[in-house]
Length: 494
Image (cartoon, rainbow, N blue to C red; front, side, top):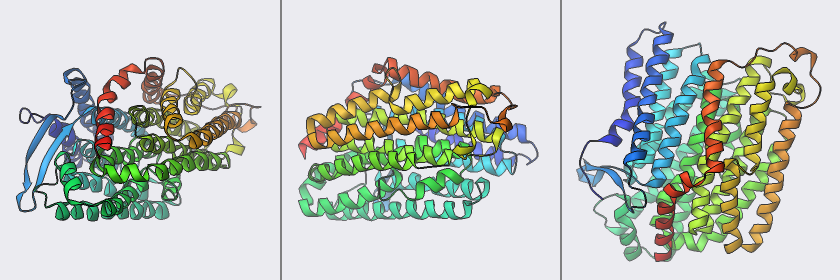
């Protein structure tokens, strides 16, 4: 783990924040300039991550591009950034979704300057979370995300935004407080000289007994389970999705939910492997409950956007299940699902926006026949739904296959219920296609505007990523194999 050199991760993380300052200095009526500056500030991290793909040393254990200096010396808090393969793929996903969501945000026409200022601050928090290697620095970036999300939903959201915005923040902030308490407990109980994540596992195994580790793991798990989200900590999510503007729903589903899975893989399991091993069967059961409950809830929805929201609850069950399996295949499956779902869920929410912008309704009973009215939009929605149900040759299939294979090797009973969940996932996606794109054309939808070039720009890269990961999964598997093996080694060492 080498330190020093050009502070690439700092630049990547804080360019969006500098973009927020630049946007704030522009006159509010200069909407085109605001959008251009914001998109440019979001494109820089994407270009940096793409460059890092070529400089990254694949197969090498440990952190790369490390920056480590004292931040709050009195408390041994460090400004410690570094990435491995897990962080790298999450940064790439976050940077790509950030740019596409910004382009989708060009339809926002009210208080444009304020919108993009909060959007850019949000992106800095997201990128920082995936780079931070100090527990307090992690919480710092985790909490940076909260305020922008509140305003982006509360100001630009739907009719029930005044309920959805504070509810989502109360849930997530509660999780943050719980994690902070657990992190401080670890610091004081071990007598650690830093909050650096790589330095803590050995100290925890020496100074904290099994019972206390179980308690600490449970507290940290709840914090990340709220974010993932895991049933029954999921209730904030559907309303937040429904009331958020479409680009923010895209970021919420594609990236912010993944912070929960990432946190379990980066912090909870490596720091407390004994507790993770003990509680693995319970986590597996919770993962299966998520899959089945989310699928059944999606099938019962009448609102297009809420159906997609519950679809996310279901798919995050596969992430939790892969984490519970705790084998290289299971962990790799969990990471693969996170990336794949990020691309697919972004497509689905963007398509909700495409249809809503033209029909001004999300009621599934009022839609139908869109293959004839909007053939291109109907085809793209079908592509996303087929990816979501796990059709072979699309990315959704690979992650679910890895996870299911891992479950068969570890939890045979849960494997049966996972298959039941897969059937239900396929069912609600087929129902979605039947209710939106199939059937006769409604008279009121006969003359709808075709998809715009801007909408296609946001969707085509996602389609390309889903196809690439579905047909050449090695491009992702080769990156995540090493961190997956490291996580399992730490669990085995616990």
